[in-house]
Structure formats: C-alpha cells, structure tokens
Image (tube, rainbow over the protein chains, first blue to last red):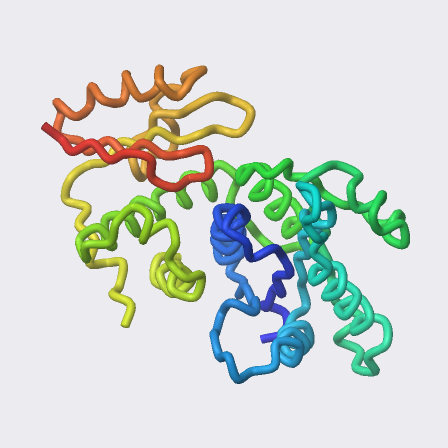
Length: 199
Length: 75
C-alpha cells in the first residue's frame, strides 16, 4: 500500500549494513513496509526499472547521502544516492497523480553539512546527521515518522527491542551452524523475513 | 525457507548489555520495562551483568550497533 511503503535509498556497502538493519527494524516498528532494491535479487531485472517501481509505490522515502565524499585518494564518490533522490523528487513534482504530491522525504547524512557542500541545490533542505552511529539513525528516523503523524514506540523501546531481535536471530542461526561472520553477513532479504516474523 | 523466530527457545532468562544513546551501557533483563542499571563503560556493565549467570541467566553482550559481541551461557 502506497501510504505504508518507505523507499530506502542508502549505501549498500558492508560498512553501512549495521545502520541499514536498524533502519529496517525501526520502519517495521512503525507498522510500515521498507522497500529497497535489495528486497529481491534478479540479475535479469533492470535496476533502474526496479528503483522507479519502488519510488512510485512509496509515499515515504529515506535518502541517506552519507557517501557523497570519497574517503581515500582515487576512490570515486557514490552518485547512485543523489541520482535516486533526484528521481524521487522529480516523481513528487512532475507526476500527474495527486498522491505523489503527498510524498515525504527524510534526508540523512553521516557528516554534518556535507550534503550542503556537495549538493548546494539542496541547501534549503533539513538534513539529519547520524555520524555513522546506529542509535542516532534510529532516533532521527523515529522522530521523522512522529512528525509525519505515525505512531511510534519510544526510541528506547525500539532500540532495546532491536537488540533482543539480534539475539533471537543469533540464537536461531547458531543452532543452524551459522558462524558469527555468516550471521553478520546474512543477505538483507533474509534478515527482512526474520523481522517480518518478529515484529 | 526461513524458519519462524518462534522456534527460538526463551526458556532461560537473558540479561543484555546494551549501548544507551549518550548515556553509557545498560544492563537489562529481556522484556523488562527498565534497565537494571546504567554503567559508564561497557567493561563495567559486562562485569556486573556476568554475575547473573549464577542466577540461571544467559548474558548477551551487544556491540554498539546492536549485534552480538559475546554470548555467555548460564552456569
């Protein structure tokens, strides 16, 4: 359902995975459905078509622009996130259907004011900084949902429950002889299925 | 096929050591409304949480990101 879907546009690298898992859990605690490119894996599917479909299915969007700046020499900046934000913004402005005018965005960044520096067209936008800390991200996302009139448990309840969920998942997978590394690297689609049965 | 999370055994009580935003580390019984106590550092919280192993609780020590760092079984 359009008013329950949350499009997630964020880095999919290993360093971001802990943030992504907590983000997905927070969304589920709000009774909403996270929608992201990793929810299904089909090498035959054109990625841009999938992104477009997810954008059009979602009233809410969370765009994390934490990888605008290269961290070392010769590393390229990641442009997928600002590109997909542009697509989403375009959908809200240009789409003829009224429901797309109701789209709401949350912009996140790791380093404060980095988005303004790299993307000055967005200097009007309020961008929440999480400093790469999972708890800060949960706090920012929960606060935004509340501003959108979505009923949410407290940050402490969400955070403790997320930690308990991690324990259940760990115990379940350890019984199935998964190593610690295996558990940390479970595909996001699999983690999401466990969250579905937990939340 | 993903197994249902209900298959996870919760017969034993679990104590958790969990990071608290801007407030140190909490020792909390799973399902409790409030933390038993908040400690300034993780090692301090772990030392105190491990005492609950003698009372039949597993102690689950979490990393800052919520994932599992260590799991100490009840004695």
